[in-house]
Length: 338
Ligand SMILES: Nc1ncnc2[nH]cnc12
Ligand SMILES: [Zn+2]
Image (cartoon, rainbow, N blue to C red; front, side, top):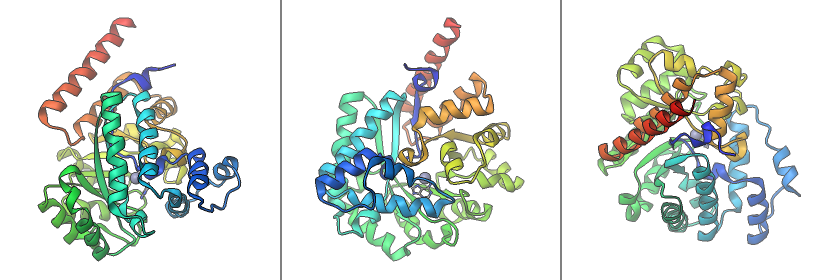
């Protein structure tokens, strides 16, 4: 049954498409592509999903991605995600993919892009949702590698909305990617960076001051720095917060201890997203639902989180106005039914 949390219109702004690889699909693609994986069954895959920090997750996430080999695989992965997203009330999605995870295994950039864009076109037609792709640089690799990726992406650049920065955070500060972010912005791309997930508040400062990002992914550790919080609030900088991810990667002890309402109270433009839902136990509606239950969020707070997802999206003014009107209509219809 569709509940309030699945029904409320929302934008998904922080989702790694490789992180939607469900164990069932991992096992099926391993068989289809004759790729050996160190798991004998879906249950064994699931049992391996116990993480103690970001790196223990990334090790499994990159290993799992090895079953993705063909254009059809990337299409099928993304198409399955868009079906789930539509059922979760996602009307607009800005999705990360990690080209280097694939090009480093010998899968051409174009294979990945063609498969993903085929699924994007399918989702637009099937679900009426709007979708953008964000190409994310892997921060554990060097900046030259990111530049090589930008060059490979050249034929596709006008179809991507932006670039991101993800993977192992500590020891790989945003400043390492200053030049490639500047070059990406010169090409008209929006800029996002994971910052303050495990890394210190200084990394959020760098993402703002050196990379000049348009959006911060996670950003939880900003709460340790009151001056930074004040600045993020003043600048209406969107923080794409991922509650189930935060707990799975032990950046927050429990959902009951999650700081989402503190962030809202501090005037931060926080939003709720799913990060790597196949690995962390749930897609966006579940993040909303479980967080709301654990933190006893009011309807108004949940609506604010959904509103923030649209305010933080890379939408035209016209598209944004349309989404906000639709959200208001949804809220008013719910108020009448109460
Ligand atoms: N939560 C996360 N943090 C950093 N890199 C990631 N890649 C996929 N998920 C990630
Ligand atoms: Zn992420």
